[in-house]
Amino acid sequence: MKHYLVYKKLLDFLFSLILLITVFPFMILAGIAIKIEDLRGPILFMQKRCGKDEKIFLVYKFRTMKVDVERNGKPLSDMERMTKVGSFLRKTSIDELPQLFNILRGEMSFIGPRPLLVQYLEYYTSEQLRRHEVTPGISGWAQVNGRNTISWNERFKYDVWYVDNVNPLLDIQILWLTLYNVLNRKDINNSQGDTMPVFTGNEQKDQMK
Image (tube, rainbow, N blue to C red; front, side):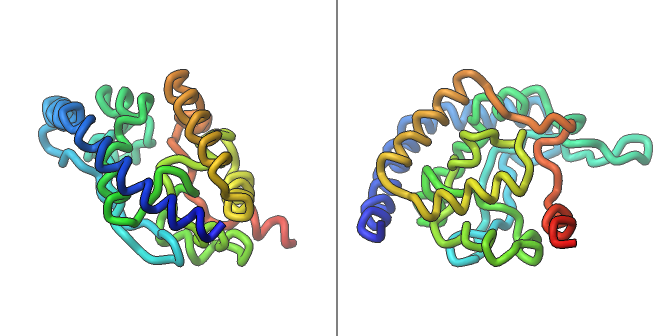
């Protein structure tokens, strides 16, 4: 596996560079569309995430939500904040394209566990922390097995399983399933009305009682 991960990092760099050159005009159009719909907000959404070996980095995505977080004094859900352009970008996964820069910088890979919020670190079990043994990816085993429609526990089990079984054929399988899901717009949002509920570790604590 160690040899494959070295080659994988090189392939990630080469393919991300080629893709950036290819899709850059579409990224420009996406940025213009975001600004036309909502002039107040930035084009890019940037947030600190946890990567390999628990190193913190800044992840890039196209902004898909309004800058407003409440209406009439009431907090808005993610789906209420979603813009029309943002909904299209998310359904087609175009919002993920700026992460090609993260791959060029060596912070991410095309395939691997999704990088999650830094504040989640304090809630992980020792087993769940193992998801950080590999470079995080734009898509992963959890994403092609439910994405935002599965529970956090299921998601972490898929992530750790990937860490233990990473190989070229598995990555090709995940890539193929990712393309299939994008074309069929599967499992984009969580059924509860948000893109994904906040992880608080409650599920794990409940199971330990």
